[in-house]
Each structure stands twice: as structure tokens, then as C-alpha cells.
Image 1 (cartoon, helix red, strand yellow):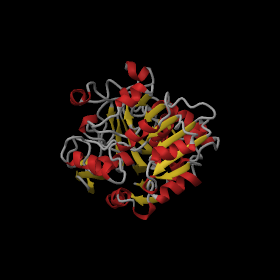
Image 2 (image 1 turned 90 degrees about the vertical axis):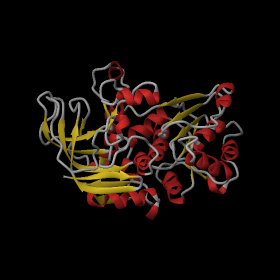
Image 3 (image 1 turned 135 degrees about the vertical axis):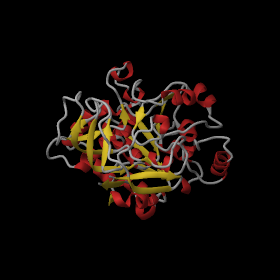
Length: 390
């Protein structure tokens, strides 16, 4: 089969690789009909996350048609259309039973590696390095799905791939980012990053009762989408001296009630702060550029919530813990527990409360995935989200 393979930083190739096979009785094989390039994939593409090996198959956002199931899978049949959540979860451990599926205790065969790096292991993730299990991803013609009896949602007739695909990751991630804020009617929410996850965080904040959502980015086309499709007030941080000052002006001097970091490891700003963080990153003094996170903390009103859904890779410098402690800020974060959100969000899509297709700007065949990565990474052709068809 054809699959998108990581061959080194900024080196992707669509190669012929062996077809996946059933390895466990709870496995299923899915023929991919739609997959996508995620902003998180760009962290791998650019070499910021550890433990990638040449030939690793990329992709954690995918859906398709079941073609084979293991003997232990009784709730799926050949021909079923399914969306597969990016966290691989067993459904039986204490974390899964609590609904915290991205903390599954049984799905990561490299748990000992994650434990050394993170203190405790994380779940397995499709196509996302050997830190999370080294599982082959879904930017391919077929994928093996472990724990398939638990890790899927069936797609009803009449729902298109593009309506359902983002239930695999970015829609639940954006929604969880807003939900963690504990939004109440009348609240103001600020969102750093107007990529697809940021767009869904904006839309979700409104769904959960926010009165005003302010979006921060530097690309005019992403800011335009945030205004016209998601309903945000926008700030281009390259056009202002201080984002925090602008946010205070928009909130009667108090700052936003809640701040969402949808940026993560590859934060960007203008001037010396960016050069300072970039230099430390290049010298391996820190692994991430926590520009958006610092700004969110310093901008949030006292007693507010900072929700972190941007991916971070390791250690950061100059974390303003004094502001967090002295101003009674709450920080909430986590890889998305996708399984708990899939059905409720699918219902919202079916009711017409949410149309996730608005973020799609590019549609390409799988064979052009390597070019798709370049376009997405370099923000060419106003690229917001690429959907690949196998």
C-alpha cells in the first residue's frame, strides 16, 4: 500500500509499504477514505518531537471503511464507516473508565520511554513517534486499529467524510480547550492561534456561552476566517505593540476571563522575544517556544483560566509562575480525551449547530501528501487545512 513516511526533518515521501495485518483479536483493518494533515504533524515534520525514525508512517486524523476485524471485535462489521480517534485506548483501565482516554494505561508499548521523559506514561497515538508507541498512522491506504471495539464511532448514512473526519482530533480538541475554561454566559475568551484547532476553540467557546471571543494570529487569511466563519474579534500581533494591552482595552481593563493556547511548541512573535526563544531552542537550552503560553498567562484576568491545547515537546524557560500563583490563575491542559466528545459533537453536526468543514481549504490525493506538508508548513496559498483522499 501507499503511505506517507517521515524520512527526516522536512522530508516526507509517499512510499510503498507492507499492508497492515490483524495482530490482536481486538484489532480491525480500516481502508482509509479520508485523512488529514494536522498542525501537530508539523511538529514532527520540523523535527521538534523526539523518537521519530525514518520510514515511520504519519497521520492521526483518519476515517474509512472496515475491511477486516479480529475475533474479539463484535461491534464492527466489514463495510462499516468509522472515524478513529487519535488516542489509542483500551476502554478497560482506570483512566479509560474515567473518560480520560488519552491517559490510557495499556495502549503504549513504549510506556517506559514516556515514563522516563514525562514522569508517567501517556497513551499510544497513531503516527506520532515512538514516544507514543510507534504505531503506524493513517496517512495511508490502510491502517491497523488496535482496541477497535472501543476506539471508533460509526458514521451515519447521509454524513459526508468531511463532516465526520475532524471528530478524530481537531474538533474535540478545540471543544475540550473551551470546555476546560468553565465558560459562563457573558464571559470573554481569548484564543492564541487561528489554525484549525484555534478555529474550533473559537466556535466551541461561543457554543458554550461566551459573549465575546478574541483571536490572536499573524496571518491575514486565518484572521479573516476567524472573523467570518467563527465570529471572533481579531488581533494581528504583528500590527500592535502589546497584545496584552489590546486585550485590556477590549475588556475594560480586566483582561479576558479565559485564555486558550492553541499554538504550542512553535510559538512565534516579532522582535527580540522571538529571537531570544529561537536562539535558546537552537542551542538546545529549551525545546519549545512558549511565547503564546507566557502571553496568555500575563493577559488573563486575575482568577481566570488558562487552557492549554497546543502541543509541547519538552522543557521551557522563563515560565511566569509568579503570575500564576499571585493572581490565582487556573491552568488546565491535556491531550484530548477524544472518545468522550465524539458522540455529542456528532449530534451537534447533525443538528446543524456546527459545520466543521469551514476550515478545509485544500483537498489533495494521498500521492501528493509530501507537497501538502510543504504547502501547509509554509502557509502557502492561504492553506488552513488539507484533507487527503486515499
